[in-house]
Length: 235
Image 1 (cartoon, helix red, strand yellow):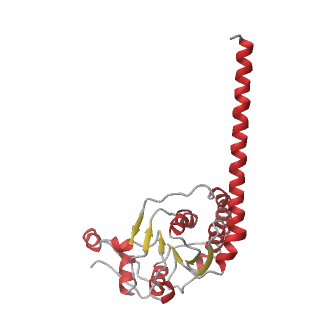
Image 2 (cartoon, one colour):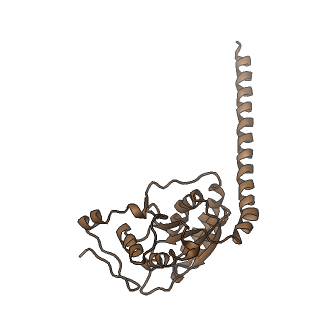
Image 3 (cartoon, helix red, strand yellow):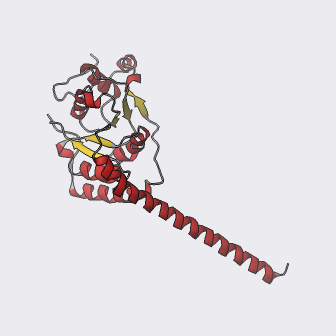
């Protein structure tokens, strides 16, 4: 084969791959936009009228977990999955639910998150796994408006409706709001809302509450935050 023919064949192959790449890119963008539009403008309005069928507790204050355990026995929440995102130590959460005589078979502790953004980043795939249409997000009044904005963006992009609940606090929650942090989290949440249509981030640190072994924890030793009338330790 002459050099001119080889160069011509090489150019034709490159053009062919470029066309394929452009086609794949167009199809991918089209899929993302279609999914986002469908979730926001069709699924979300429908799910807004749906009853709460999932509870997400944002870590930062043990009072939120106490509140979740208190409402868990209610008739409307008895079969609702509860996800506690990077909250108190697992044995503390289990003792709270035992004290409130709340069921534990539908409660999961997620320990991948290290920020409010992460709370939604890792927990939305878990909510989707359980087929949640409308989620009650439990946080603190001091954690607003960042938690509210992020919940609307992350969950809304998946067509999941949101109901934010803020129990009364005693003491100072661990979250401290700032306008800059809120702005940065909202900005990256908007970007992730698009990317999340095709990428579900996995979390490999999810523990069913009923599998938390208190005996092992007592042997290791642990203490719990004393707040809202609760004081738990291993002494």
